[in-house]
Length: 242
Ligand SMILES: [Zn+2]
Image 1 (cartoon, rainbow, N blue to C red):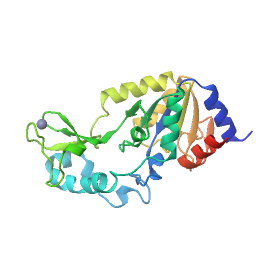
Image 2 (image 1 turned 180 degrees about the horizontal axis):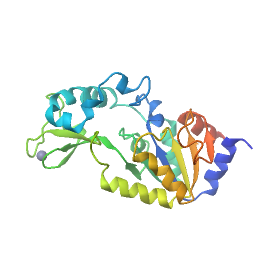
Image 3 (image 1 turned 135 degrees about the horizontal axis):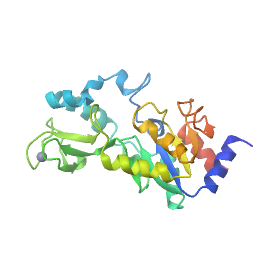
């Protein structure tokens, strides 16, 4: 039996599916990954997202943050892979998505239970009073943007280097990974700690693992049960058409 057929059958026979997604699912929506030959870090210095650097030079960091995350990526649209996961949730099969992406595309596709492991570009947080604001309500004409409540610098509400994972996201992810009977890993090679541990936690709790990645990853020969060497949209298209 072909792996794609096996994957489809496994999805059909599972009741508590969780998806674990990374940059690869959003690449086809025009969002470049951070790493790799054409990744953002081949063009930009990662220090702009270093917390210490940001606190010392918020205006420099913000110049590039605005360019990358607010001018360039902000209008990206979900692709068929995002919509497939939303559909699977509507059917009651998929109980949640743990994503490492900060682009909000799962929610835009209609997914409800999305754990944003690394936060989101859609909100800004005050570094002083911790108030959060919808990004759309804050002008980025003058940088850095300042908190309407206390006048301190606002920071995008995603995880910078040197920052811990938000507690709630971390705990919810562990809970989903522990309870699922199938985890679908899409577009992530498992290089970023601690997010990369999520599929291992699922496996330890006896979940099956379907992996969709064009190239093999750290998971492929260790915990993956069914490996589909495809782009996210190709795999979803094939699974839909079976
Ligand atoms: Zn404030």
